[in-house]
Length: 269
Ligand SMILES: [Fe+2]
Image (cartoon, rainbow, N blue to C red; front, side):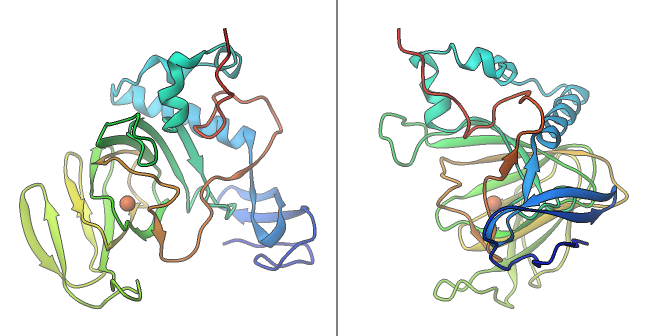
């Protein structure tokens, strides 16, 4: 439950940032609210999520490339040979969708590989991501206009999915049976019917299929994989309810890792 305690309720325009209080399972937390009620994540929270994610990857022995351990100081020294990472926004990506409630609506992911829909220099036609989802944390309802993707429970708990067909004209959710493509098995379920996925299982989502998932409350932190077409998350995510993509960050401590939209320009020789 989100409670803004100052005199400007969430969603109303603010002239400038203001302090507010939100309430979540950890008690009351002070946050900063920006114009139009967008919440900031504290850098300390981003750092803590990344460290937790690293520990979960370690637990399941999912190894990641060395650049994901570069410090901000090391990134400042990197030249053009690392352009593919900067240009294609590979790497750490932590967001609360601007809603200030990461624990319940948030995403911690690493884009491990991707092409670039805007730059023909990069011809990779596929992408891979690894995500950390916590029990009770929702990855909110959206579809993709172009991207086809597989979402895979790599290790951990049980993920619950809800699927809807999207009306191609209005982009509203339809109350029509949805095709489930589940590791080679194809069948239909009523719109929105919960589909539970356990370790090793995956679903395929075609464009214009709304999908959302959460990890069961009584479950454990879970590694969720994505294998997809090359994609641009900035332009190909159609959220059912409008959401922010990258959080504003309040710098209350130094960054432990840079996020994929924070790399400095390449150092010139
Ligand atoms: Fe998706």
